[in-house]
Image (tube, rainbow, N blue to C red; front, side, top):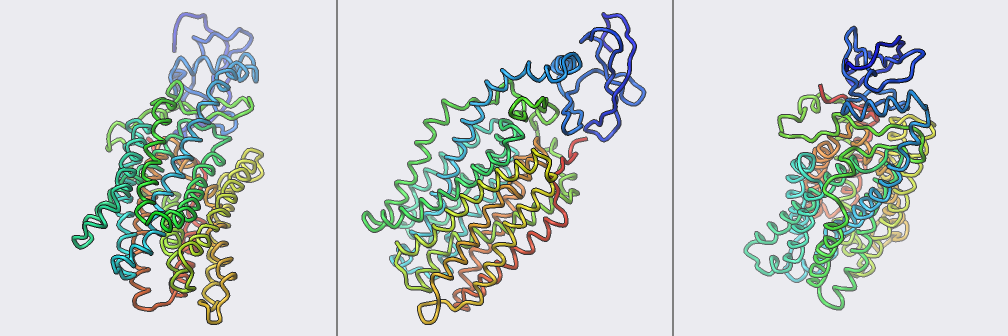
Amino acid sequence: MISGCPPVTLSSVGIHCSHRVHAQLVRPHGHGVCGRHLRLRHSSKTVSPVAAVNKDEGQLTVQSPVAALKRLQSRLRGGENGAAEHAPAEEAAAPDYKVVVALCAAVSLICSIDRASISVAIVPMAEQYGWSDSVKGAISSSFFLGYTITNLIGGYVATKYSSKVVLGGGVVLWSLFTVFTPTAADLGLMLVPLLLSRGIMGAGEGVAFPAISNLFSNWVPVSAKSRSLGLAYSAGQIGNIVALITSPLLITNYGWKSAFWLYGTLGLTWMLAWVPLVPDQPPNKTKAARQLGGSGNIEVSSKSEQGVNSLGDVPWRRFLNSKALWGLVAVHCSFGVGPLVCLSWLPSYYSDEWGLDVAKSSFLSGLPWAISFALANLAGFTADNLINKKVLSITATRKLMQGIASLGPATCLTFLTMQKSGPDGGNLMLSAALLTGTLGLGGFQAAGYGSNHQDLSPKYSGILFGLTNASASSAGALAVFATGVLLDKTDSWSVIFGAVAVVYALGFAGFALLGSGELQYYDD
């Protein structure tokens, strides 16, 4: 208790603290509120008022004593007027988070352009170098091996150090090795330089989304979380479209090497905006978990605000024992398989199975990503409304969105396996429509598992994303390589699509049974 003011008569209001024990907010009767006398009664002991109350969530989270005193005093004196006192600060912070979201969406777009370009370029590359489907699969999957490694450490590094620096470093690394890809292919040497180049490029991209997840955890208001993440993820779909549509034009007019040279410069250009416009830390070094519109929510500024100083600070055992996290891993892995197989192999599918040229096959391969972009953003706004208006709980909202994102594609692919393919008796438009539905409906994942890391733990969201994305990347790398091997052995696309449909269904089953949208208490 802080001395210096006369004692006052006290009453208490029950609240819950983040450590699952009952606590009481001590409030004076009949006196003006003395900020230095506000205190908390925890069990039977008086403790320092180091707490901020989120009235909508009913949680007590640890915070700096001075900030907690000011917030509690303001709330007790003026009710909702206390929230109004903070409105100018929130309004001042709003443009900052929007700049971060916009630049992260832009880099997500660039990331996808650089990654997707190989799926188009590999068709003329295979013709030039005489590669089989197995070799094409090995080249495509080498990217994801590097991607997996840095996913595992990217979330931790972004949490411990500056997410801005980690993301910027990744962009520079992958951009340089995108430019180097044609040279690596020309070197030959049993594909070793090319495989290494693609792996290092993947390592650069591997830190991107863990860093973005951590940035959003620090910058983006809670009520804008789903749509902001939806924009960032869906921008990646636009990147796929840009790569699949522009690559054939570049290849036809300037050769396949020009695509890598041009796309590699995009990330370096993006850095010219990233470095000066985004601070190393969010405003006041606090979580921007505010609710827009002056609703009175107090920003979450708790232990989750602190960095992770060492790997020993990360509660790995609690992660392993978390059913919610295992449900998230299951569904994320299914999306490591489905979209990556389609992204890597659809141009080859249309070229080999239907005899289409690069331009036509790339157009049909890019169309699903346009639908995915639209649906991802629709899902984000819908999810935010369902949660903010308390129509559904966070858990129910995430599972609803993910159910559409997983079972929709599984259904489309199942029907696709029943169709004849190829110009002799097949229906190209029907096959293209089913593949468009597969990837388009998958866009709902942005408001499903794509937003779930933030739900489980704002503090560790970057690390959690790194863990689940690394698992998904490993599954994707294996699936992309296995696709080439299976095609060499069976020459059947129905086998491929049927297997992917099963993976989608199993992934959602894991999320439906184990997943949660509730805050997980990973810290002591």
